[in-house]
Image (tube, rainbow, N blue to C red):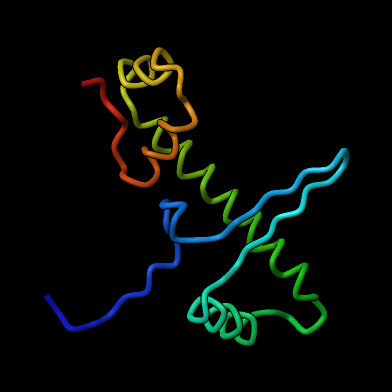
Amino acid sequence: MSGDTKTKLLSTNPDEYTFKVKEGRRRMKLYVKLTKAETQQWNALKEAVKPEHVTQDEFAKILFFRGVNGFMEELTNKVNSMTDEERESIIEDGDVATSAVELITTGVAPTEE
């Protein structure tokens, strides 16, 4: 194993990040609390690739929706590569959302034990 340190930018463990969603009648607000290291990464990314005419809020929205689109594309590809039996199992389980997240994060569809 090499001595290189890798920073994990995405965790599926909710204890490792602060992300709040507040919904009103017509709008939704997302709040993300970044650690010092994550803030440094955000600032470096912003300085490197954010166009001058784009506000910080617009840039964050663009990245958020690109992430959502990427997540959905990856999920679609994984579901399309599943067998009919695996799809049926997830649907019968009834917890499609949890199964989808597990499929994306582990690359393996959950199985009944």
